[in-house]
View 1 (cartoon, rainbow, N blue to C red):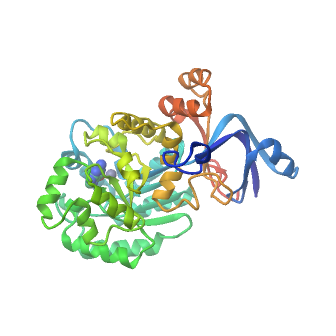
View 2 (cartoon, rainbow, N blue to C red):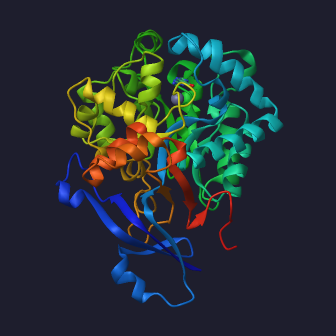
View 3 (spheres, rainbow, N blue to C red):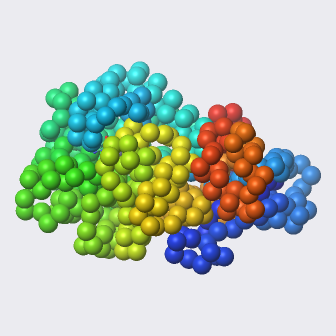
Length: 435
Ligand code: GUN
Ligand code: ZN
């Protein structure tokens, strides 16, 4: 089925932090996007493309709005949706006081399904069309999020959390069950439709050496799965890792020794790395997830984007809910701007959007499928309405360029401004592909 969308259209073609501004993004003020069976087949000026359409093609006219690629959240815990904004702790105490008790509730599959639905609807309402997601230690929590994603035709990657020490007994698996359960879940879900599996050791503190070893074996056996974990988020955590793994050169080196630093490895946070760590990540093709709302909320530290991308490491933006405080990638971009501003690193709107779209897709190794709206890509996009709230509407009248408009939307916008989210050319929550 063919559908056409007429609106202003903006997307990134490369990293504006590393490519010339003219070639890093494309803006078509009166644009048209043509989608055939869920895939973008043309993007250009409406005046040129309109005449190529047969009379029976439906054209959705959104000329007062802006189409952007769907946002991509590179690190988020669906099981922590209901503990966002829990007061007063830094990482290790926060985990024990808030995160672990909440995750224990996911032994109940009815609860897992309920939260999975609310979580994915929350992503879609905020314009996020793809995410890399932590479930919990319970295999049924993974089934719940994949079933919910498949029902929405979302491109989603998720995995069962592996943890066998330094956590409450009801949340522990072991080296053998971690391997066997993950393997069964890979067989059930990886590559099914738009779904992918991520091998998910929580972090080196909660996995024994035996579990890290079985996880590395699994990663070698299934090289096209993703690996997601946490790395160097908090100083107390980094000191504890040094005590637990005295033979390792660094925190990253723990993962490196067990074969967990490779293409399709995504490390959340990466705040306390050195040049060697970043060089190893770049050489292996591993990526970093920048989680600004979480890093500020948990008092963890400031992400050094310049050092990461300068070393050649791919970086994507991420909410890290529930350490993060919002599912909104607009909010996440605005906090990223502040984190970088504090370090003298500029973040123009186009680069913030890159980190939430094409850059995030590259971090996940999916830039050939999603991340922008070039012909051939899957048509996951959002329709942004600058006039959906007083604050954004008034500000839109004083902006003089698309860059200024985007910047104002990043700071002042919220889910009210995401007037629609399209998954493979179908409006989310109102139609399924093919209907
Ligand atoms: N490190 C290990 N587990 C977690 C978690 O759930 N959230 C965050 N922010 N960091 C972690
Ligand atoms: Zn996290």
